[in-house]
Image (tube, rainbow, N blue to C red; front, side, top):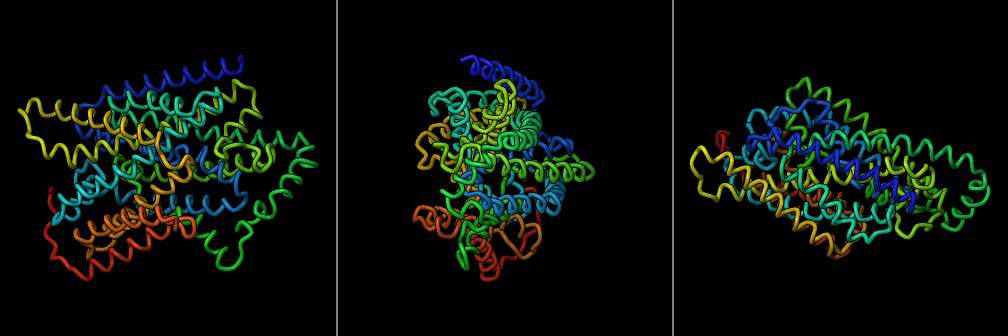
Length: 491
């Protein structure tokens, strides 16, 4: 009970400071542009830390360590795919999206695509926004689920109550301050996350080294019981099956190529090209360190608890930290998991709300007097954010999967695989047109759902196939139904 009291004090203090900081930043929000994209005025270091905190979520501190704990060395391919994708995004895509966002003065992700393809602009806004909102319900649910798991591990409370508590922390400042509040709270969370992923593995290695009985008895016995899968880079698979295992892990790469709107919006919000270069280096260094730490925590779990020693593989991070640290320090570091969930859930909520509000709801409303327009627009945005948060929380209670890794993987295919194709071709292929954009998005949506529902995703991951199928679709439709390009406008 004393340990739980220490945890409670640390977490309450952190949450109170976070919410206050988010509300303070929200006071600076005056326009739709402030609410949706922070006025496209972010310093590079803020954008980089926010992008990384958002990109990793409960995936990096619960999902990835959990898979490393469950599969051993095989999970290296997932980490390599993610790191390669993030480096590629920062090096080749981030600065281009920043320049394009400034050129077209856009406030949302699909607004950028629509303005690049004005011949189908309004339809792109509608189809793109609805697709993003649909998939992001699952992604937000994964963050609420992560909060429930972490609070269950620490306090033993019902995971469903933990999900509700997580939502209550996130929603107020997100509704009030929008993108600006979200980005600046992300900075704090990114710092806590990286400290956790550096200090945790270092102390964990010292802990294992100082307990030789783990090497003499527990580890060999556990690995012998588990068979050869933990020690194999391919999960003991050979031939074609080994190739499938490698590509399944590395396929996370494709979702990072501009196709994750919550990450691309950070690129688009950077103040100027100089800040974009600074952000690139911060983002890449943070990523390399974080993924090494996440894998290490999962593998330390194998050493400490043995394969199958935890009832839920995704409890491994908080369980390891509770084992190797005094309760007060563990509480601070486990807050990194809460930080990861908060940083992504709030980002997904505000992006979904902005997409729905700016591209579908507001265009359908009759504008009021000019003097009242800005205030009413902000009220609409905040109401939409609140509504989406409530729906996401309700859906997360009835999610068919209780594994964060699975939920995030599903979204990574449906959104990342689809929109990466759209963004890459929009940026690098002048022939690509609006009709092809719409068909590509619809094919990506339907293919991901069908492939996952039929169980085929367990054989060949949709993260890879969605990217390939939508890429082929985009190319075929572009050539089969050529469109005479109209001048780009502010449509």
